[in-house]
Length: 194
Length: 175
Image 1 (cartoon, one colour):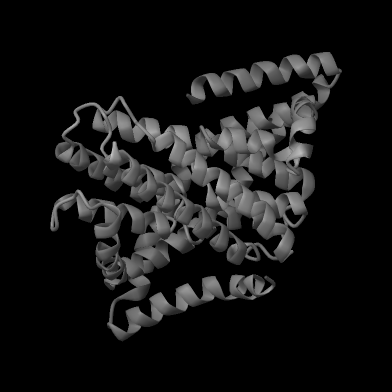
Image 2 (image 1 turned 120 degrees about the horizontal axis):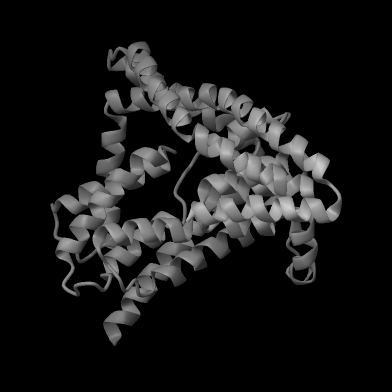
């Protein structure tokens, strides 16, 4: 997907630059942006490592596992078709907790395993089961409690208080997730009626 | 709504205090684990570095050439009607497809308008409560070999729009 997106961005940008008579600015911007990407990564190295370090402590002390277990009763409500004690519960819970804690890259492998298990349970072949729809809608509704990367970007670009958006972001994330949950439950009920 | 600003100040210190404090109580080797985990952070950033360079150059070109302003002007009549800043239309559109391309646009907005401006704050909050709808769906369903995705797209877009609308409302109430 990025292949075409990236290619078109560059081609269109340069053409518009020529037509606008801003090709000198385009030239400077391409060099400066590449430099800037590296300065940004240096800031991110610090902030990200702080976060993954703290999360590793949470994992080693069993806090992450405790959160994962605490999620099981919620999963029974959201995914009534998964048998109790099935391994899919475990994968879904780990995926959600990793997303909540802002470890997106650790969440994806767990999420893919969860989808594999859900497909094993799926009786409709190539059509998604209700559980799959629910899982993806909630996943896409964004679960991340602390947007670590946004904090890093804000601090890189000179914010007076990079973390001031945390409370507002938390509320917005909660609202979008609740919207996703309500939609999933309603859609499941409607599909059962049919 | 101002209390959300106080909460913001407490969240990170509280999370660190809770986790490290619990670790000390459990007599866990907290510092050793911290350094081990910090290494993962390095790997994550190094992995995205080439992508970020490529995309930041592309966005830099779009900004300097005036393409981004052109796009914002083009959608202005529609966004004015919905009271949504036209400058953020490229961002929310791209965010549906690619997280790293959206990141480059976020950085561009921070650079152009500042992270503490209305646009900067709104961008921060929208990015925190949305996900890459089409990318996530295609990766997950492809892995499971599912072709008919039923109401997943509708639900995901619904959650995303609710997130964007609440971000606009919350930003104007809190700041």
